[in-house]
Length: 204
Image 1 (cartoon, rainbow, N blue to C red):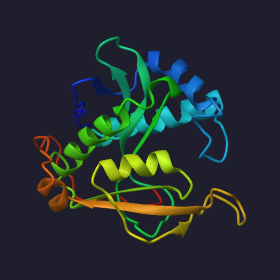
Image 2 (image 1 turned 60 degrees about the vertical axis):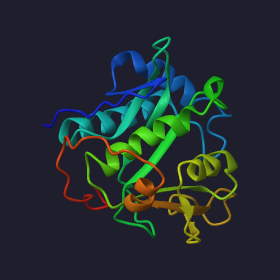
Image 3 (image 1 turned 180 degrees about the horizontal axis):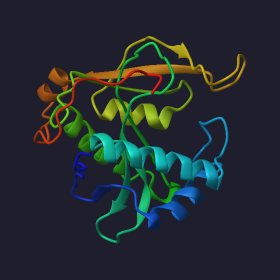
Image 4 (image 1 turned 90 degrees about the horizontal axis):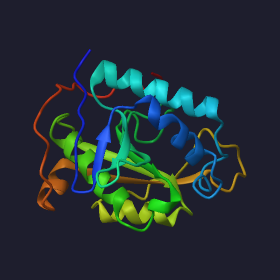
């Protein structure tokens, strides 16, 4: 058991998952527009499974995908966080920064703001040398967030192993940022809170 890392930003709180987050998260995952760059929407049971997995990771290592709340209203808006991909990818083993926000909170820079806080944890508290992010080639909104974070397209496009041949979303791009590049761009690492010795096996 390790104490969870729960960063704040000017507009957001990144928190460990609570029961109050489940219903709005399930609604978000059932929204076809939110999930248009994923293979399908998710059921309430799938949402609960995801939250259970992330909650277990928080208990074990102190970090995972955070539930995100607005500081001005306390409203749950989605997740932002750091995870180890469970499938073998070109970057494996690696740590990914990712996000998914309810549509009414798009276009306000919140994904970028929260992901910057996640990178501060990655390069500070966790001491990582690099972080990746990936998405379907056609997902320009997420790619724009990656670029605003200072990540660069590695050119290592790949077929996502969870999607069948011929699927419109199968081809993915891979973005990356190193700790050195992040610091040079003015990033400030979060204080070390949890020793980290590298990602576990991708099969975990």
